[in-house]
Length: 147
Ligand code: SF4
Image 1: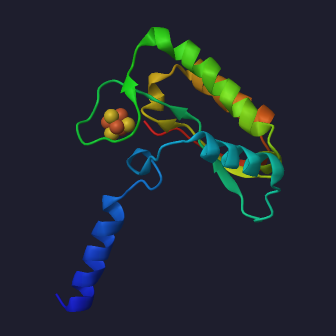
Image 2: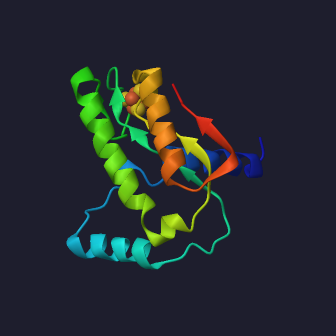
């Protein structure tokens, strides 16, 4: 193996070591000032990037906690699912009404997690249909439900 190959392997390892990016591991304190800045950005900015986006409502329940996992998930408790889904819809609705999101197009809906397959088929369909009603979803959009 030459130096270039070794370098490539190390680079690939470093990249995956931080995977997925921008999730819990990079979590920073949300100060009132930071939240205000973020909210102002969403409320007052038109998305002119021209890029289609991915909408990822998260289902933060798992059957058990994997020791290596740094996702913000918790153990599945059936009685928490409906209140969680109602709160998730309220938050999705809040984002959907901002200028930035209104001027964005989404070509993927990904139920993230956690383990979204802990939901019933009806609950998954309900969240996906909610997203379709409230966001600009492309006609040829893709829907993913990781197990
Ligand atoms: S999100 Fe995935 S890796 Fe993390 S605890 Fe749940 S099943 Fe395990």
